[in-house]
Length: 85
Image 1 (spheres, helix red, strand yellow):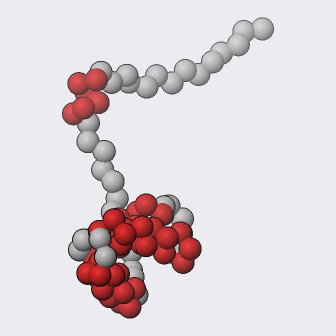
Image 2 (image 1 turned 90 degrees about the vertical axis):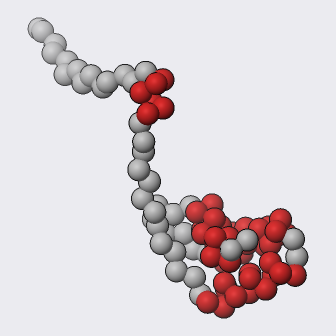
């Protein structure tokens, strides 16, 4: 009995090739309630950037529901960007 194996060869990239390879990341658009954005804008005026970011993290963890392919850090980053801090 002779066994045959199908072998798939993947190219091995050198460090230089890996550095020059650009991965394209799809940008996801998140839609926020205007009241949420306004709330965090006011909070960012009344407290430090670090305190505002901590409140945003807590908000995302407790109040946001992640959909397929989303992660909490993406939502946190997007909300921070929306309130311009």
